Image 1 (cartoon, rainbow, N blue to C red):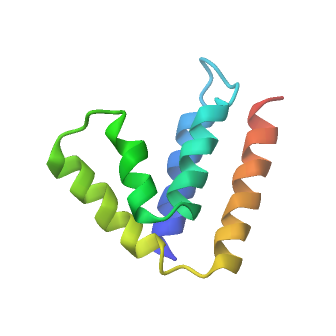
Image 2: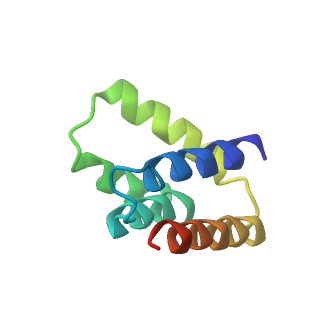
Length: 90
């Protein structure tokens, strides 16, 4: 539960700042990928950022935790993110 709250706060911080309140579709694509894509495919998506191995390992460790969240809760988180995007795009 705590991790999903952190993810929600990061989404709010990235999407709803005054300089540019338009939500980048790629951001939600990445967040959805983090929630719904399996680990091997997610590793391939991470490879495009050429991140250090330690950072990739850390993200994958967090992903293992979020993968334990039920599908029902993942879908609720997705709905909240969509509502945030709607408010930020106004």
